[in-house]
Image (tube, rainbow, N blue to C red; front, side):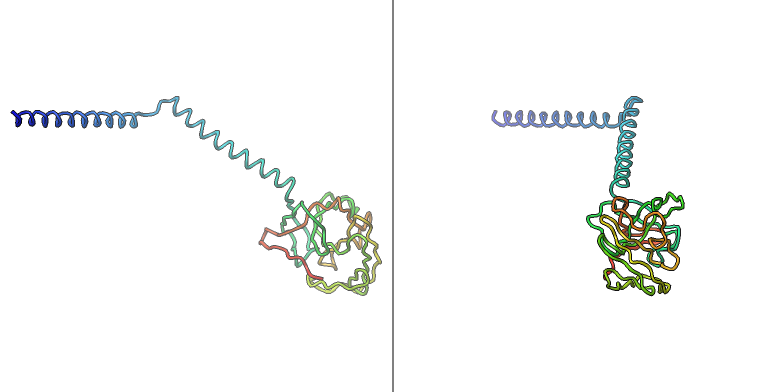
Length: 222
C-alpha cells in the first residue's frame, strides 16, 4: 500500500509540473503574439509625431543657442583688404570675442568704420591697439613711440615709410589704432572724423581666424 501511495504522489507531482510548463508556454506564446502585433495607423502617427517634435525641439535649441552666441558672445568679420597683412590677409574671416575684460596694447579689435573713416562705409574694421587711454603716441622716422619709448613690432610685414606724425594724445576711454601693413593701411593716421576709437565702439577682440586657414592669435610682447 505504501508503494502505491508513493506512486500516486509521484504521478500527481509530475502532472502538476506538466501543467505549470504548459501555463508558462502559453504565456510566452501570448507575449510573442503581442510583440508581433503590427502597429495601428494611429499608433504609427503618434510615433512619427513624437519623433518629429523631438527633432523640432532640437532644432529650436540649436537656433536659439546660435543666436545668443552670435549676439552676446562672438562676432564674425571678414577683412576685405590687406591692411593687417601678414597677421590677417585679404579676405580672411575672423572670430572676435565680445566679452573683453580689458583692452590691452597689441590687441586686435573689431569696430564700425562709419564714425571714423568719413567715406560713408558702414562696415566693420579690424585694427591693432597701439595707444591706450592717457598715452602719447608719436611716429618718428617710421618708428612708433608710446610715451617716448619705441615699441618693438615684429608683426609688421615691412618697415614703415620714413615719416613723422603726431604726437597723438589719447583721450580717456579711447584708443589709438593702426593696421599692421602700415604702408597701405587706412587707420588713425588718416582718419578724418575721429583719430581715436571710443571704447564703446569696440565690438570684439579678435581671437582667431578660421578661413581660409585656422590660426589662433597670440598677444605680442612689447
